[in-house]
Image: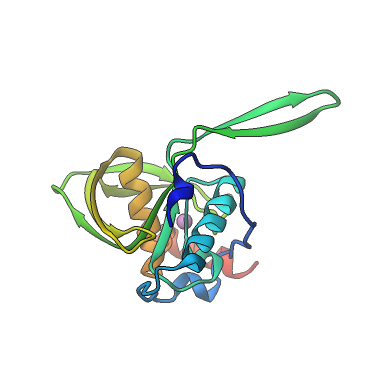
Length: 190
Ligand code: CO
């Protein structure tokens, strides 16, 4: 079922990405229980949507599906190719798509670090967020098979960010009370 991940080709359907404060982004999610062709199709479309956004991660609530599932790729290259007449073409390559179903994160050690984050559901906002440096994630693949992965650096940040979406949290929820209120006020006025 997850064969399309090997020798990945950028194909699928574009899904609409919901913007904060859409209710789907602050709602709880339920476990994925059916590992079928429909789930594979959804993941394929989520990856396609993520790459074209472009973003390095996309969680199911961001497209209005309240299920425990996210996709990511912290490795792909995005190149802007200048064409005549001031036109541009964007070329994506070196794909390394990953799919995490029913993930559970365990922290490994207590070290934290701070990095700038953004989110496809909060366009134009970039803020420093504190995250665990090293994590272990238990998850299922498209066939329902269980896996365990240790992650650090960019992958660890991305996993923690996407996993927050599954708990109805966005990255501004991780900021100081003052900043959080500022953004919440600003975004609900739109
Ligand atoms: Co996000």
